[in-house]
Picture 1 (cartoon, rainbow over the protein chains, first blue to last red):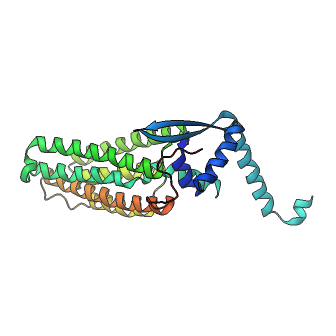
Picture 2 (cartoon, helix red, strand yellow; picture 1 turned 180 degrees about the horizontal axis):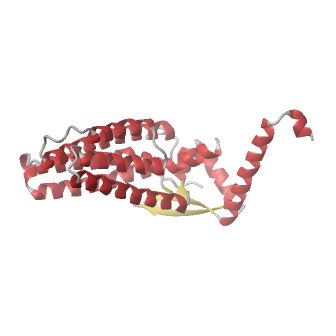
Length: 81
Length: 198
Protein backbone atom coordinates (compact mmCIF):
# COMPACT_ATOMS: atom_id res chain seq x y z
CA UNK A 1 0.00 0.00 0.00
CA UNK A 2 1.10 3.60 -0.58
CA UNK A 3 -0.47 5.16 2.49
CA UNK A 4 -3.22 4.48 5.02
CA UNK A 5 -5.08 6.32 7.72
CA UNK A 6 -5.02 5.80 11.47
CA UNK A 7 -8.26 3.79 11.63
CA UNK A 8 -7.08 1.37 8.92
CA UNK A 9 -3.78 0.76 10.73
CA UNK A 10 -5.65 0.25 14.00
CA UNK A 11 -7.94 -2.27 12.30
CA UNK A 12 -5.05 -4.12 10.68
CA UNK A 13 -2.71 -4.22 13.66
CA UNK A 14 -5.33 -4.62 16.39
CA UNK A 15 -3.47 -2.07 18.57
CA UNK A 16 -5.22 0.38 20.87
CA UNK A 17 -5.19 3.99 19.73
CA UNK A 18 -2.75 5.05 22.47
CA UNK A 19 -0.37 2.24 21.65
CA UNK A 20 -0.49 2.81 17.89
CA UNK A 21 -0.13 6.54 18.37
CA UNK A 22 3.00 6.02 20.48
CA UNK A 23 4.54 3.65 17.90
CA UNK A 24 3.81 6.07 15.04
CA UNK A 25 5.34 9.01 16.91
CA UNK A 26 8.56 7.03 17.36
CA UNK A 27 8.58 6.00 13.70
CA UNK A 28 7.99 9.60 12.64
CA UNK A 29 10.82 10.83 14.87
CA UNK A 30 13.12 8.27 13.21
CA UNK A 31 12.07 9.56 9.76
CA UNK A 32 10.47 6.26 8.75
CA UNK A 33 6.90 7.49 8.29
CA UNK A 34 5.34 10.80 7.31
CA UNK A 35 2.21 11.77 9.23
CA UNK A 36 -0.27 14.21 7.77
CA UNK A 37 -3.22 15.54 9.76
CA UNK A 38 -6.10 16.64 7.59
CA UNK A 39 -9.88 17.06 7.61
CA UNK A 40 -12.28 14.91 5.59
CA UNK A 41 -15.83 16.26 5.60
CA UNK A 42 -14.99 18.39 8.67
CA UNK A 43 -13.72 15.35 10.59
CA UNK A 44 -10.04 15.06 11.55
CA UNK A 45 -8.16 12.33 9.71
CA UNK A 46 -4.57 11.20 10.22
CA UNK A 47 -2.81 9.83 7.17
CA UNK A 48 0.39 7.83 7.43
CA UNK A 49 2.82 7.11 4.58
CA UNK A 50 6.15 5.31 4.55
CA UNK A 51 9.11 7.52 3.65
CA UNK A 52 11.81 6.29 1.23
CA UNK A 53 14.00 5.46 4.24
CA UNK A 54 11.05 3.69 5.88
CA UNK A 55 10.49 1.53 2.78
CA UNK A 56 14.16 0.59 2.71
CA UNK A 57 14.23 -0.25 6.42
CA UNK A 58 11.03 -2.29 6.33
CA UNK A 59 12.33 -4.30 3.35
CA UNK A 60 15.50 -5.02 5.34
CA UNK A 61 13.44 -5.92 8.42
CA UNK A 62 11.36 -8.47 6.48
CA UNK A 63 14.53 -9.86 4.92
CA UNK A 64 16.07 -10.39 8.36
CA UNK A 65 12.87 -12.01 9.67
CA UNK A 66 12.82 -14.37 6.67
CA UNK A 67 16.47 -15.21 7.30
CA UNK A 68 15.75 -15.96 10.98
CA UNK A 69 12.77 -18.08 9.96
CA UNK A 70 14.93 -20.10 7.57
CA UNK A 71 17.61 -20.55 10.24
CA UNK A 72 15.04 -21.77 12.79
CA UNK A 73 14.01 -24.51 10.35
CA UNK A 74 17.55 -25.93 10.01
CA UNK A 75 19.00 -28.61 12.32
CA UNK A 76 21.07 -27.37 15.30
CA UNK A 77 24.39 -28.80 13.99
CA UNK A 78 24.04 -26.90 10.74
CA UNK A 79 23.33 -23.65 12.57
CA UNK A 80 26.48 -24.00 14.71
CA UNK A 81 28.67 -24.38 11.59
CA UNK B 1 1.52 -11.90 11.56
CA UNK B 2 3.18 -13.37 8.48
CA UNK B 3 4.35 -10.91 5.83
CA UNK B 4 2.16 -12.39 3.10
CA UNK B 5 -0.89 -12.47 5.37
CA UNK B 6 -0.35 -8.84 6.34
CA UNK B 7 0.12 -7.76 2.72
CA UNK B 8 -2.86 -9.71 1.41
CA UNK B 9 -5.09 -8.48 4.26
CA UNK B 10 -4.25 -4.88 3.42
CA UNK B 11 -4.67 -5.51 -0.31
CA UNK B 12 -8.00 -7.31 0.05
CA UNK B 13 -9.64 -4.54 2.10
CA UNK B 14 -10.79 -2.59 -0.98
CA UNK B 15 -12.30 -5.75 -2.49
CA UNK B 16 -14.11 -6.83 0.68
CA UNK B 17 -16.21 -3.67 0.91
CA UNK B 18 -19.10 -5.88 -0.10
CA UNK B 19 -21.98 -3.51 0.55
CA UNK B 20 -20.90 -1.70 -2.63
CA UNK B 21 -22.11 -4.72 -4.60
CA UNK B 22 -25.68 -4.25 -3.39
CA UNK B 23 -26.65 -1.04 -5.31
CA UNK B 24 -25.00 -2.54 -8.41
CA UNK B 25 -26.98 -5.77 -8.05
CA UNK B 26 -30.23 -3.86 -7.54
CA UNK B 27 -29.44 -1.75 -10.61
CA UNK B 28 -28.98 -4.87 -12.76
CA UNK B 29 -32.35 -6.23 -11.59
CA UNK B 30 -34.00 -2.83 -12.16
CA UNK B 31 -32.51 -2.77 -15.71
CA UNK B 32 -34.10 -6.17 -16.44
CA UNK B 33 -37.47 -5.08 -15.00
CA UNK B 34 -37.26 -1.88 -17.06
CA UNK B 35 -36.65 -3.92 -20.21
CA UNK B 36 -39.75 -5.96 -19.33
CA UNK B 37 -41.63 -2.66 -18.89
CA UNK B 38 -42.65 -3.72 -15.41
CA UNK B 39 -44.75 -1.15 -13.50
CA UNK B 40 -43.23 2.34 -13.22
CA UNK B 41 -39.93 1.01 -14.60
CA UNK B 42 -41.36 1.21 -18.15
CA UNK B 43 -40.50 4.95 -18.05
CA UNK B 44 -36.86 5.60 -18.96
CA UNK B 45 -36.52 8.42 -16.40
CA UNK B 46 -37.25 5.97 -13.55
CA UNK B 47 -34.16 3.97 -14.54
CA UNK B 48 -32.09 7.17 -14.70
CA UNK B 49 -33.33 8.05 -11.20
CA UNK B 50 -32.35 4.53 -10.02
CA UNK B 51 -28.84 4.99 -11.47
CA UNK B 52 -28.51 8.28 -9.56
CA UNK B 53 -29.81 6.65 -6.36
CA UNK B 54 -27.36 3.76 -6.79
CA UNK B 55 -24.51 6.28 -7.25
CA UNK B 56 -25.56 8.14 -4.09
CA UNK B 57 -25.79 4.84 -2.18
CA UNK B 58 -22.31 3.90 -3.44
CA UNK B 59 -20.88 7.17 -2.13
CA UNK B 60 -22.61 6.74 1.24
CA UNK B 61 -21.30 3.17 1.54
CA UNK B 62 -17.74 4.26 0.63
CA UNK B 63 -18.02 6.92 3.35
CA UNK B 64 -19.29 4.34 5.86
CA UNK B 65 -16.32 2.06 5.18
CA UNK B 66 -13.90 4.99 5.37
CA UNK B 67 -15.21 6.06 8.77
CA UNK B 68 -15.44 2.56 10.29
CA UNK B 69 -12.58 0.69 8.64
CA UNK B 70 -10.28 3.46 7.44
CA UNK B 71 -8.85 4.56 4.15
CA UNK B 72 -5.95 3.02 2.29
CA UNK B 73 -4.27 3.78 -1.03
CA UNK B 74 -3.17 0.60 -2.82
CA UNK B 75 0.40 0.44 -4.08
CA UNK B 76 1.02 1.37 -7.71
CA UNK B 77 1.68 -2.33 -8.42
CA UNK B 78 -1.77 -3.25 -7.07
CA UNK B 79 -3.36 -0.42 -9.08
CA UNK B 80 -1.70 -1.60 -12.30
CA UNK B 81 -2.82 -5.17 -11.57
CA UNK B 82 -6.44 -4.00 -10.99
CA UNK B 83 -6.40 -2.01 -14.25
CA UNK B 84 -4.99 -4.99 -16.18
CA UNK B 85 -7.59 -7.31 -14.59
CA UNK B 86 -10.36 -4.91 -15.64
CA UNK B 87 -9.11 -4.76 -19.23
CA UNK B 88 -8.74 -8.56 -19.48
CA UNK B 89 -12.13 -9.11 -17.80
CA UNK B 90 -13.91 -6.67 -20.13
CA UNK B 91 -12.20 -8.23 -23.18
CA UNK B 92 -13.34 -11.71 -22.11
CA UNK B 93 -16.84 -10.38 -21.41
CA UNK B 94 -17.16 -8.91 -24.90
CA UNK B 95 -15.53 -12.01 -26.40
CA UNK B 96 -18.16 -14.30 -24.84
CA UNK B 97 -20.99 -11.95 -25.87
CA UNK B 98 -19.68 -11.74 -29.45
CA UNK B 99 -19.09 -15.49 -29.82
CA UNK B 100 -22.46 -16.49 -28.35
CA UNK B 101 -24.40 -14.02 -30.49
CA UNK B 102 -22.52 -14.47 -33.77
CA UNK B 103 -22.67 -18.28 -33.56
CA UNK B 104 -26.25 -18.14 -32.25
CA UNK B 105 -25.37 -20.47 -29.38
CA UNK B 106 -28.22 -21.60 -27.09
CA UNK B 107 -26.52 -20.08 -24.01
CA UNK B 108 -27.14 -17.03 -21.83
CA UNK B 109 -24.32 -14.67 -22.86
CA UNK B 110 -25.26 -11.97 -20.31
CA UNK B 111 -25.02 -14.26 -17.27
CA UNK B 112 -21.90 -16.02 -18.61
CA UNK B 113 -20.07 -12.81 -19.48
CA UNK B 114 -20.78 -11.16 -16.09
CA UNK B 115 -19.61 -14.31 -14.30
CA UNK B 116 -16.47 -14.52 -16.41
CA UNK B 117 -15.66 -10.88 -15.73
CA UNK B 118 -16.03 -11.23 -11.94
CA UNK B 119 -14.11 -14.51 -11.77
CA UNK B 120 -11.26 -13.12 -13.90
CA UNK B 121 -11.12 -9.86 -11.96
CA UNK B 122 -10.93 -11.50 -8.54
CA UNK B 123 -8.56 -14.24 -9.71
CA UNK B 124 -6.10 -11.67 -11.09
CA UNK B 125 -6.28 -9.23 -8.17
CA UNK B 126 -6.73 -10.67 -4.67
CA UNK B 127 -7.57 -14.26 -5.51
CA UNK B 128 -10.90 -16.05 -5.54
CA UNK B 129 -12.53 -16.82 -2.20
CA UNK B 130 -14.70 -19.92 -1.83
CA UNK B 131 -17.94 -17.92 -2.02
CA UNK B 132 -16.82 -16.15 -5.24
CA UNK B 133 -16.06 -19.49 -6.88
CA UNK B 134 -19.37 -21.01 -5.76
CA UNK B 135 -21.62 -18.03 -6.59
CA UNK B 136 -20.06 -16.88 -9.86
CA UNK B 137 -19.06 -20.40 -10.89
CA UNK B 138 -22.75 -21.34 -10.61
CA UNK B 139 -23.73 -18.28 -12.66
CA UNK B 140 -21.16 -19.19 -15.32
CA UNK B 141 -22.38 -22.80 -15.51
CA UNK B 142 -26.02 -21.64 -15.62
CA UNK B 143 -25.19 -19.18 -18.40
CA UNK B 144 -23.28 -21.75 -20.44
CA UNK B 145 -25.92 -24.47 -20.17
CA UNK B 146 -27.22 -25.10 -23.70
CA UNK B 147 -30.80 -24.73 -22.52
CA UNK B 148 -31.53 -21.14 -23.48
CA UNK B 149 -32.31 -21.73 -27.15
CA UNK B 150 -36.11 -21.71 -26.82
CA UNK B 151 -36.28 -18.18 -25.41
CA UNK B 152 -36.25 -14.85 -27.26
CA UNK B 153 -32.86 -13.11 -27.04
CA UNK B 154 -34.28 -10.18 -25.06
CA UNK B 155 -35.82 -12.55 -22.48
CA UNK B 156 -32.50 -14.41 -22.18
CA UNK B 157 -30.66 -11.12 -21.62
CA UNK B 158 -33.12 -9.96 -18.97
CA UNK B 159 -33.00 -13.26 -17.08
CA UNK B 160 -29.19 -13.02 -17.28
CA UNK B 161 -29.32 -9.53 -15.76
CA UNK B 162 -31.53 -10.77 -12.89
CA UNK B 163 -29.21 -13.73 -12.22
CA UNK B 164 -26.15 -11.44 -12.24
CA UNK B 165 -27.94 -8.93 -10.00
CA UNK B 166 -28.89 -11.54 -7.40
CA UNK B 167 -25.36 -13.01 -7.54
CA UNK B 168 -23.89 -9.52 -7.01
CA UNK B 169 -26.07 -8.92 -3.93
CA UNK B 170 -25.22 -12.33 -2.42
CA UNK B 171 -21.49 -11.79 -3.15
CA UNK B 172 -21.69 -8.40 -1.44
CA UNK B 173 -23.23 -9.88 1.71
CA UNK B 174 -20.55 -12.60 1.89
CA UNK B 175 -17.72 -10.13 1.18
CA UNK B 176 -18.97 -7.79 3.90
CA UNK B 177 -19.24 -10.66 6.40
CA UNK B 178 -15.66 -11.65 5.56
CA UNK B 179 -14.52 -8.06 6.07
CA UNK B 180 -16.18 -7.94 9.50
CA UNK B 181 -14.53 -11.26 10.43
CA UNK B 182 -11.12 -10.01 9.27
CA UNK B 183 -11.15 -6.42 10.56
CA UNK B 184 -13.68 -6.57 13.40
CA UNK B 185 -17.13 -5.21 14.07
CA UNK B 186 -17.96 -1.74 12.70
CA UNK B 187 -18.92 -0.68 16.24
CA UNK B 188 -15.47 -1.23 17.73
CA UNK B 189 -15.47 0.79 20.98
CA UNK B 190 -11.71 1.35 20.88
CA UNK B 191 -11.74 3.06 17.50
CA UNK B 192 -11.65 6.80 17.60
CA UNK B 193 -14.22 8.35 15.29
CA UNK B 194 -12.13 11.52 15.16
CA UNK B 195 -9.13 9.58 13.79
CA UNK B 196 -6.89 12.38 15.07
CA UNK B 197 -4.27 10.78 17.27
CA UNK B 198 -0.65 10.11 16.38
